[in-house]
Length: 239
Image (cartoon, rainbow, N blue to C red; front, side):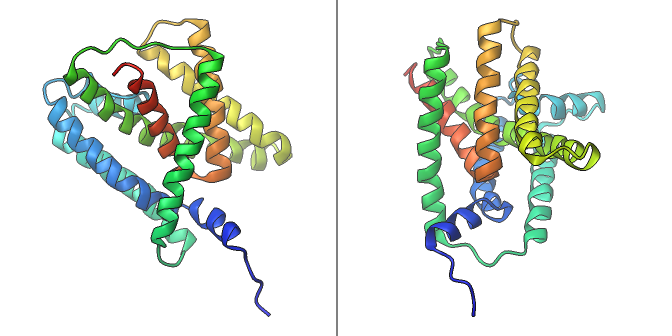
């Protein structure tokens, strides 16, 4: 007799997969890359989010500075990573109502993150012009996609492999250690673009830990949208 799975469990299991994450994030990635080409066509390698700094610096070192080529490569790499996960999972078709549920869930977690971060330490932004607001809104999309891809999907998974398979550490310890270490790296990489200030650094570690926990338990797609919506909430305070 086939085991009956509750609708809630089915949603939680399916929405955590790369399968749904690909569907959720690919349209936003396309919008982001188009926005980068339009908004930052004269400063393509200056305006970027922390998650992309490694990738774009690599392109610069290879003297690959054509904006369209770089955007195409980034888009191709993202699709390759996502498609690899999709092919491994071999999941059935997408259920449209799950996408709606994932969006609502992301809004919920983003609100929790926003309130937690405001209690921890408040960071005010000074954004005056409409052009700056639109540009930062676009960068908020990229930050959610690439920072979650690099510092959560890739980094947490890599640290877990080392701690679990390499050091045979119990998952009870390996998982939180991986999440916190990835959050510290996430906070440290922001220092490439800003001066070190401990309260801000600690806040980024705190936020990275929350997002890392969300990624581990709810998957890449949910963490991306929660990150993006959180960024938008921060920007909304200046409007």
